[in-house]
Length: 133
Ligand code: ZN
Image 1 (cartoon, rainbow, N blue to C red):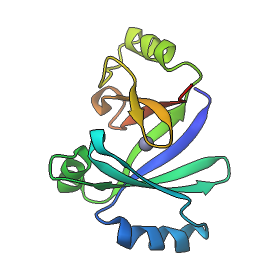
Image 2 (tube, rainbow, N blue to C red):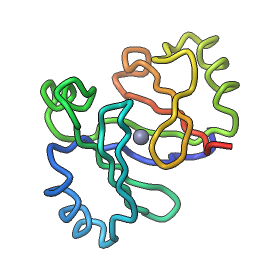
Image 3 (cartoon, rainbow, N blue to C red):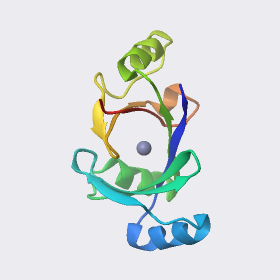
Image 4 (tube, rainbow, N blue to C red):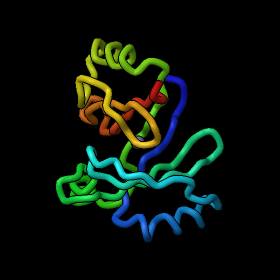
């Protein structure tokens, strides 16, 4: 894996949390984007070489709505940038990690993404992310 690409944080409301994180990070939100397939609205901040991604649920069926219900607001996932997402998925599966999708999926920020089940990673939801070719 190349680096921590971003840290995902689940929030109840982007309208509340975007100004909060702008103050906290002393940086402006440079992009908001909805990912309809995942049922989320996202907002991004740059911090040096990495990013913070805020995630708000678009519906009660969204994985973010379920996370908020169970755990409340807070750190939701760590995203690692990889060079070749399919090769990395194959490597991790061989190592015994559980992938949440058999194929990479389109994610926010022009990426291909795949998540690992947190039960195979000490409770941390891990996202693999690769810039879309
Ligand atoms: Zn993410």
